[in-house]
Amino acid sequence: MKISASIYSDKETQGIETTISNLNDSHVDMIHVDCNDDLNVFADIEKIQQNSIIPIDLHIITSHPKRFYPALETFDIEYVTFQYEDLEDKELAIPKEFTGQLGLAITSDTSIDVFDQYAEDFDFILFMATIPGQSGGKFDKSNFRKIRAFQAKYPNKKVHVDGGVNAEVSFILRNMGVYASVSGSYLFNSANINTALLNLKLNEVESHFLVQDFMRDLDESPVVYDDQLNMKNVLEVMNAGKLGFVMVLDKNQSFKGIIGNADLRQGFLKSIDNLNNIDVKEIINRNPLTVKGTYTVYQLLRFIKKESKTVVYLPVINENGQGLGSISFMNLIKGEI
Image (cartoon, rainbow, N blue to C red):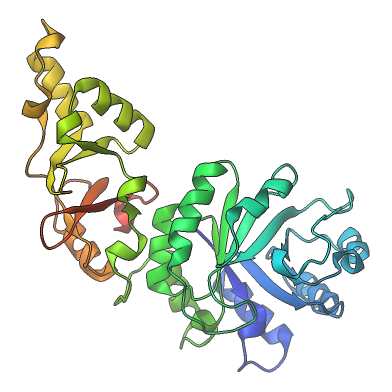
């Protein structure tokens, strides 16, 4: 996941040129520039472009975007985002001369469906997980579900996130396949930018979010109930879920096990001469790895690291053994966790 450093969050360094120099040394992926309806922002952008080759990530908050179009034609800016809620006219006729990537920023209260009218021309969405313009806010966990919903609806569009991104949130976002996240207070308030950047890109630290805060809920997970357990249902749910397994629950949501790709293969091989003889109940793995919804991210990582085999997915259960949802690690490499 790329990290975009919010340059105006640096309150300690004297002068933007020094901040740019520090970011050059840290090898950050992008420089995030917040613009609150102020055309003078392009003077700073000019300084950045004169002193750095790091791509610029410009977030414009304005009710009249047309004021910014001439500058967008002049400056070669890699990423430009418009804040949806502030637009008086929701139509954005971006000049064809602008060749960078376009994004739409939305707050936690705005539906992802507003992206529909921009989907043809825009490249990404920016989820504002805290109040726009407020530095140091806490990440709103409702955005985890919104990110998954957007990815399901627009699998070819990128997701950017801004607000409350610390090392823990960064791990969760990386696992979700988020393309880029903006970091301000966490990056610049750290004793060392390089260490903070490493935490955002790779390391994990003590955590506060629980697995149940960012897991796929049951309605997003591949689930088959035991009173509807047959091979056709298992294959259809597994195919639709695209996670390589299905959870088996009873009518009270009690967790009965999983059927994964390996379980299917073994069942097919056992009954290879007559596949109609397969008893689906016999191929259920009734003692798979599971994780509690009350685990923190730190506990989750410690749990995974104890396993000798690669963990690709985990069913999530509660203290009473009922299914809550699932998590998948397909967006992470084994070396990271």
